[in-house]
Image (tube, rainbow, N blue to C red; front, side):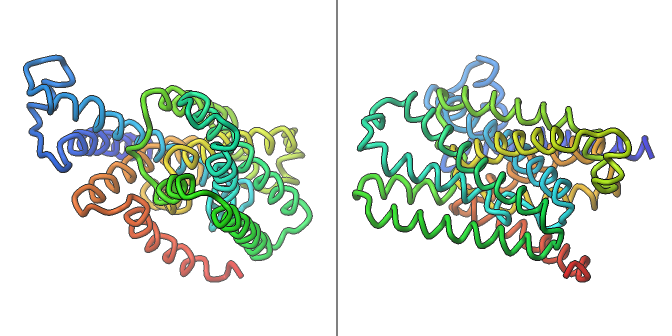
Length: 334
């Protein structure tokens, strides 16, 4: 079993490196592997191509890896916390909460006078997304403590998401043309809009969220067996739940803030990891979800560039068949 896991992790790591290299080569301007290597290592390369590789494609590939790992782990944590195979950043309205925070900030930034400062704007967008996602997640978590029925929680999550979307539409209707255009572009989802300055916010936030997720691996394993059993084993449920909510807020909120609402990765990838590894242990599932999420989003980015499509549409096409399979497999969920 250990040897089998090692082989799978090795294959995923090789696939990640291969897709990273392909992602650097694919785009409007075709670039060879030797040119990519020369640009990264400081060798002889056409200055224009070197600029494209370093300033655009390298940044985008790094964001894809961070975002894929973050969304996959946040989805895994929510599926464990709510003991619900259909839980995810979008289904439970967490990403909608982040979207509301970003909408309030982007559409209100011109009035606040912070739109002209890139650093203040980036901090504002991130902070607004964190607050919005944390508020919705805390609300859903509070409801789930009292209501144990899976479908009721799912429906409430969707209703919260719909209510938040309605508020966002009202804000869009009342905003000026420039702010509205900026927000509509953001909603399409993009891995290429993250600047170097913003990456210094994205990377630490995602790393912090993943670190917290690693710290609660053992408690999450105990929670799989039910909260009552976990309590008898001495687990502090409230502290564990708070840490999971904090981790999910940092992961899903940060990615939504800077990449837009990238769907289905958080919902589908944890299930794909379970299928590949045939294991429910979070010591295996968490790193597996991180690697699989990074691989999946790199693949989606490559396809989106080849077909000139928004990355959101590609993640949906990848994720929907997996979600449908999960629903059919768990048809007794209702």
